[in-house]
Image 1: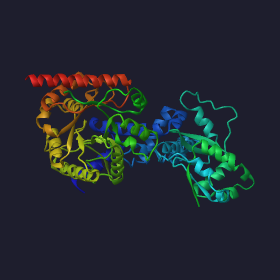
Image 2 (image 1 turned 30 degrees about the vertical axis):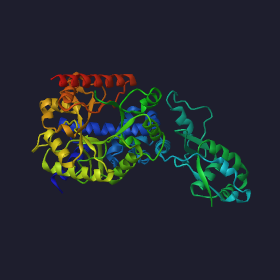
Image 3 (image 1 turned 90 degrees about the horizontal axis):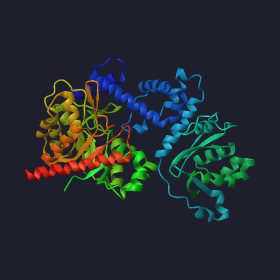
Image 4 (image 1 turned 90 degrees about the vertical axis):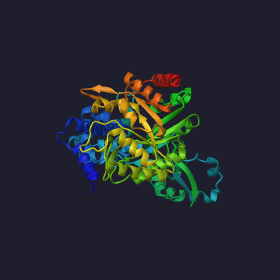
Length: 241
Length: 275
């Protein structure tokens, strides 16, 4: 190892550690942890609001020590935060917190996912009825499906800027949460069990005939389901399988 | 002719700039804010690109890493540069990563031949991949390594000369380092080759305890405007950027800073012509 390499390895170890440092190096420790904390707050604003500033700052510090930044792009930082929270002793009383973190990371990723051309609904309508079963709908690159056990969408909405944190009355857990990016903004949407089954099928590349088969008795809901999911921006295009 | 003045584009100002289209020579963005495959940030940049020249200013490439620059990071930068066709691509004369660990901060290098050799090799690789020369920016620092064999401006000039890249002269960083390390800011310019200076940055700093800290969270200080004037008198006007990254003010404050930069450059030029 060259002298410069040795110095760089030692420098990183010293600012990542907790040993006292001279003021000139302590500033770098402070700046690095402040940068990681800010990146985590940007990706997880609802988690940060729900646990409070002091709790979040300490969790951010322990996370930074446990999961070192591995990219020069801070938008990639925080990927493992949900798993970290799941094992973080101070969050043991907040069993829903890892799922809220998963939801926020999916939203964060959706903001940077690839664009898709506008869906050509006319071309879809023009498919020969005989061949409709072979239509494979492509989900938009920003789409993600979560299956949390909590009414996360209501809690997430209640903690957006301008809201006081009180969820709408009657908020209940849904079978799934669909993340889409529509008109430039990523957002979570509740989906019921049939919609979640269909989305899982589309995520695995299934054609319409096999989606209908997986829906069983609920297959007659496909047209209304499709129109809702289209409106949410879930689809990018289609092909004939 | 005065200097072409631009401002750093920060997300909260993007919509207002798109609506008002203020007269700015260019906008500069942090490259890493546009490393995604798509989405609203890139769409905004694509739209502003139609009205303004754009420069890409990176903070995460780590030109000083002893184990080379990250291939994936460089590939993202190359894709963005192809998409945006920027006026300049710049990075900092610093390091931030080693062995796959990132500090996500601009860390100082020892000022010696070994560092020069590492940085020059890394810049050569980056310029090969991007197929264009880049600019490197002198950084502010709070730590100096023992055993330096070069003074900071000699180090900067040597890297620029051997790498065949341009210099992005940050006069606020010169001022901050002059205060913290006790050297004469104007003497710093003596070591630089004027023809290599392609762009100038000005920004705000703050005094904290015994240190001057490069916060990019305040108006440009009077001493920095004086140093900027001196740089323009010595090297001539250059595209100049007002940087403001934290505690963002209204767009009008940034536009006012840009107007001041243009006025200072114009008056400095006049003095120099008169002399």
